[in-house]
Structures are given as structure tokens and as C-alpha cells.
Amino acid sequence: MNFLDLNALTREEIDLVLSRAEEFVNAPDQRSLLRGVSVVNLFFEPSTRTYTSFSIAEQRVGADIVHLPPGNSSLGKGETVADTAITLSAMGVRVIVTRHPESGFPVRLGEVFEGQVVNAGDGSHAHPTQALLDLLIIRKEFGQIKGLHVALVGDLLYSRVARSNVIGLRKLGAEVTLIGPPTLLPEIFARDGVRVARDLNEVLPTVDALILLRIQRERTTSAAVSTSADYARKYRMDLQRLALLRSHAIVMHPGPYNRGVELTDDVLRFHRWRYADQVFHGVPVRMAVLDYMINGARTLA
Ligand code: NCD
Image (cartoon, rainbow, N blue to C red; front, side, top):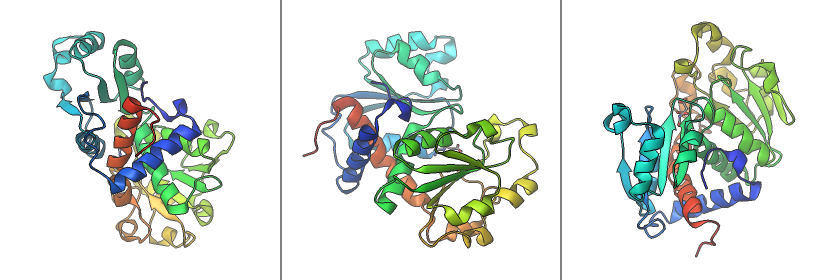
């Protein structure tokens, strides 16, 4: 099984992985789970949170780990992805965790690699493990996701985090509102259970969880984003906007966040800002994904 996006998982499978991740929070030493399993981390894009948490997760489940920076691999000498996959398969590598600027790269790799591929973020397409950890934070906070109202604000067009989150949230029964300017959030993004809104202030008093997104400048042409000042005026989360939230609402961000663009420092001091909790759960969630891929739906002891 490859782990490419959440649409390949059933609601039950998502729940199972989240529950397993929760168990790993209190029992982080699981070194027998992937003993003898070789895992290669192949990241073609910068990454702090995802790279580090996958690395720690792999250690905690006892895998044999190789970090292969693409610049140091033979891909730089003209070896094709297919031939690299043949090489890694021949060595007995079972899992490749990969991040790539090209949407669909993990699918392409999965077609030629004999082992299993985990998508750690591809282009503007998908980032399933980030979505899982976001779902876990929301489920932990409210007990369940069904019936909640979750809003995502900002660069919906280019955010792979948002795309995977919408799939997961809908699967688990949340109502979703997407908020942003038409250049970053086309009207066609609306569908059953997913609403498109332009006015952040109007939506804030109705949300249970608010997920802020970074403007993906590396994927955006300048014309797509209006001036930063204009964006900030309409969509930046600040002290006044925090006051519009209901008392139980939480605010999240996948990171990296840009201070002054999508949020002000007031948000970082907000008592229901869940960023650190999200980062913390990145490790047990990725342990649970690796365990699920290698060991399947076994019951925990
Ligand atoms: C995100 C990513 O790289 O997709 N970060 C992350 O993995 N937590 C979001 C981003 O870059 O904005």
C-alpha cells in the first residue's frame, strides 16, 4: 500500500490511525514495530517540521533509516526516477518517504518502486500526514469531528495541506468553509459540504476550528496575490478578529507561518492557538502511518 492522500482511506481507517497515534503519545518507544525495515527519506524540497518528525517517528518505530538528499543522489547524475527506484528496491528498501515540488511525483515513484511510498507533500496536491495530525488535534479537542464547522483561510489554490484537510474533514463529517480572495480561492472549490466565503469576519463567529494557511509564494505568480496590505486587511488574523471567535474555538496553522501576513503576534499568544500541539502530534501520527502501512490493522496490545 502506498500512502498518497486521504481519499484512499476509509473513515474507519482514518479513525484507526488517529487512535493508534493517540496511544503512541503515551507510549512513544515502539522500537519493535518496524525492526529490520529500511526506510529512505527522499526530500526534494525544504522541510523542517515534516522532515524532522518523520525522522523521529522512524526512529521510534525502530526502522533502519537512510536520509538521501537528492543533491547527493545519482538523480543529480541523470539517473531517472525509475532507475533510482529499481536501485533502492534491489537493496531491499521497503519504504520511501518523499516530498517533491511536482504534484503527482509520489504516484510516479509508486508505479516503479516495489516497496511502499509515503507522500510527505507533493506540489500543491496533497499532504496527507499533515491533514491527519490536524484531524487528530480537532478530534482531541472536541471528542469527535462529525458536525463541527471547520474553516480554512488563505491560499486555498496552492495549499496541499488544505486539499488533504478538506478530504479528511468531509470524510469524518465536518462542515467546511473555505475563505479567501477569488484569486486564491476559485468559486468552483464549493461542493457538497464545502462552502466558499469571502468575508472572514462574517464566518468567524460560527467556527469551531479555524485553520490559517501560508501564502505559497513559491507556487504563486505575482498577479494571483493582491498586495500584502490588502490581503492583511481582509484575511489576516489579529486581536480584533480573535475577539469574534466563540469561546470554545481553536486556531491552527500547519506552519511555517509568516508573522504579519496571515497572522499577527497576538495569535501566537492566544490561549486557544494550537500550533505547538499540532507539531507535537506530528511524530505519533507519522509513527501510526508507518505502523499501519507495514503491519496493517493489527490491534494494539
Ligand atoms: C506545509 C507544507 O510544506 O506543505 N508545511 C508543513 O509541512 N507543515 C505548509 C506550507 O509550506 O505552507
